Length: 89
Image (cartoon, rainbow, N blue to C red):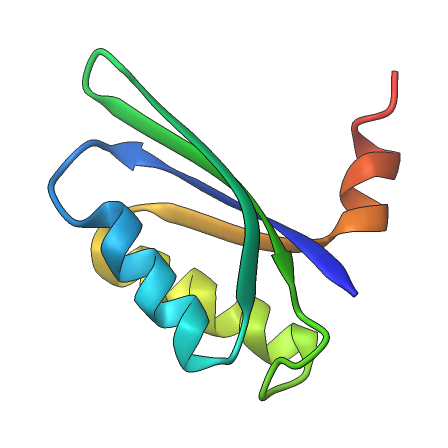
């Protein structure tokens, strides 16, 4: 199963590294990643494989939300099919 991870917040050193280390600690594999900085704001979107995730998806979502709060960012994890349905025009 795939999921979409979004990260948004003020840019600073280490955002990508900390986010990726956190995902790796749950055995989540990053399949695709895109990031940009607009003025001082950082945005990143990742497609990840959660098939071998060490915890249920709901627990991963909560853990990454908590990690985001610790980092002063918004980190959201959504199943890919739900993300696509929400953003279909």
